[in-house]
Length: 152
Image 1 (cartoon, helix red, strand yellow):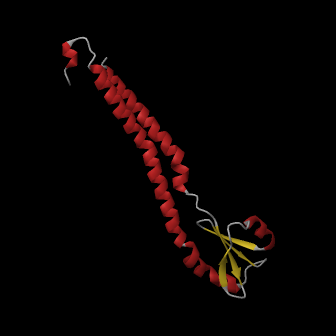
Image 2: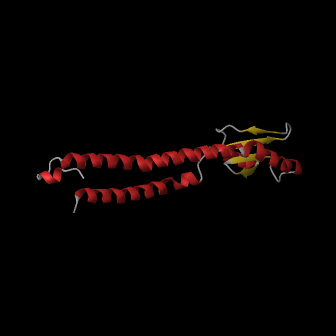
Image 3: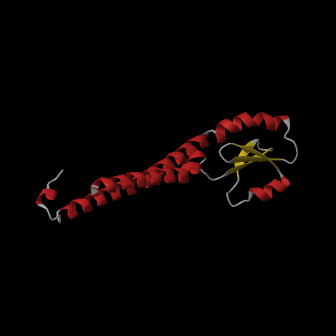
């Protein structure tokens, strides 16, 4: 059997396995990229949303306030109990002002992860192919028969 053909087939199979494993490793992160949580407090007197510093634990706030969760890892804390009509009316504005701009952040994080996954998947494959090709080329110069030295 031709050693070049055998090494190429081995490289092809291992490359396919590598791409599948890399895709499986990064699938969850691409599907739902982890962006930092953003917590907001509705200040009733000022009728505005105040961003809560990241150092404050939302788990502590859950004990004393009502939490309304939104997509993109956003939470809004209001006064304890059921939200009144005024607070319910603010939800569409909160969605437009706070939640929707985070879609761009999610999209950017997702594309960064896709870019990284592509690099992890294909750069090692290209390096191994180039290294293998160079080694096969170098060792073919040591063949014993002159007809084996001909380039194909």
